[in-house]
Image (tube, rainbow, N blue to C red; front, side, top):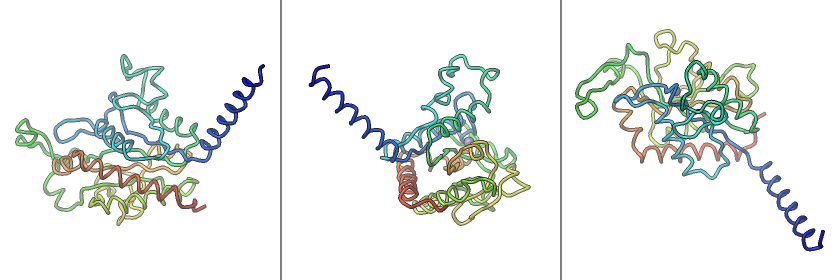
Length: 273
Ligand SMILES: [Zn+2]
């Protein structure tokens, strides 16, 4: 090997080492757009599926953040590490179950050695609280929440965590959830308060910090992520009023900035355990 070539190799090796050191010290966060076109989630007041709302929030966040982010799937796609096996073209419910979709997300997060898992969702409610309205959606007809349900409940966001005392990431999940709840209230969002057992259909839900919209819920991704983990319901898309508010580009940009501030604050403070 000529001296020049050897020097180039050494320089390249040095550079790769620096890249690896930077990689090891910059924390990775996982952003998980909930659902996918095969398991599309809740219906918006004009019939649009939840996964598309989740994709739009993730796109807004990726434009805003300088954090090192891995998304669990691309917009309109199955989870990333299922794509080679099934994709969504030709994937059927026989070969690709909802559990596969959820497992793929936490498997990717756990193998990435990420420090924070954020699953993005948009909420709905039990069907008995929803009513059809022919005047909605430019007269095409849609649905919204019953006025009496809205009269006795606040409609807005929630941040879910796994409050199981056996979960070693509970305290850190709570720390991030509270930072995020605080930021979302700061941009004028209200925490939802309708997940009360036994009337609603969320049987495992219980409030952890009502003022900040933080609730416990037994959810696969929260129980299986081996890192601090939250699932945020951006708003309620079954409600025509909230759906219109949270579908605006301006809102999505505001939400993305609030989420980014919570991530920065979380990463800048030492872990509490
Ligand atoms: Zn969802």
